[in-house]
Image (cartoon, rainbow, N blue to C red; front, side, top):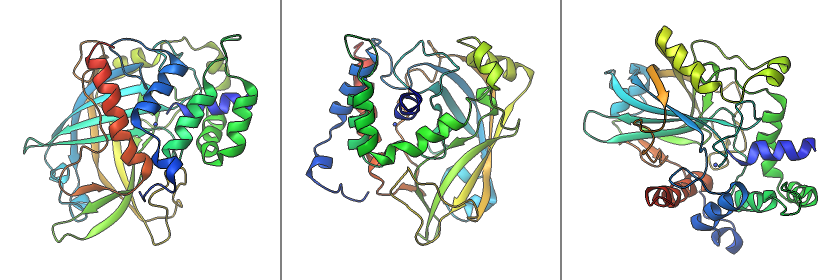
Length: 330
């Protein structure tokens, strides 16, 4: 049962050319359909990370970051931000104590009219190195009609054949969920390219670290916390004053994985503070600004570019399929 919980935790969070025909055969529609088969469909809502909360604020980049990237994100001027916090999975009523991933998605509205998106998780790694793993995991998790729960044998078989799914699940099993969206770090998961004014490329990974400090629910709190405390806690926190995260960027070295989000970089990589995110208000997502945004991670400004990470490249078409369905009221 514990292994099943680990897999349920890791699955719901979402290059080099794909290695073989089986990998290439995976389509965005297949994956979204599989998510729907596992969690059901809430018409007009996101297929994954359905339960969420909106927030707004600004970001101010640092001069240090401007040396590595020419993006206007790092101009040093305040950049308006629309944020969305969420719980992984397609269940809009998932309890806030669930051992699954938390997300922070950001839309930066740059002064030239362009956008920069960042879609992050509170886990340092993702639960699949290839789209095929994510699809197979969704299929394995589909509830058995007789029990309403995943078939343990299918989960066991999946785990045995997809070791790339285990690192994120182990992290979530070992670490209790955050006590607040405001007391969690969020990781970019993937490797990106920073490109400066001289067209020099630097491979980077980033994370956002809360100035309030990281705090997780204790084991006792995990048993007694209400099902819906995260949204209220964030709204109340912003009423007390701005909530801030520092954007920390790590610089890769030769040999660091650049196309596998299931493997973390060593902790001793050189890093610098790239800026500060400040959120000044939060609100329920229904009718709020973040509700209709498709936080496509491949929406990037000049000076920031994707690597050939198969999962990163696959997220964009998968988000598009989900976005089209919910806009159509499906």
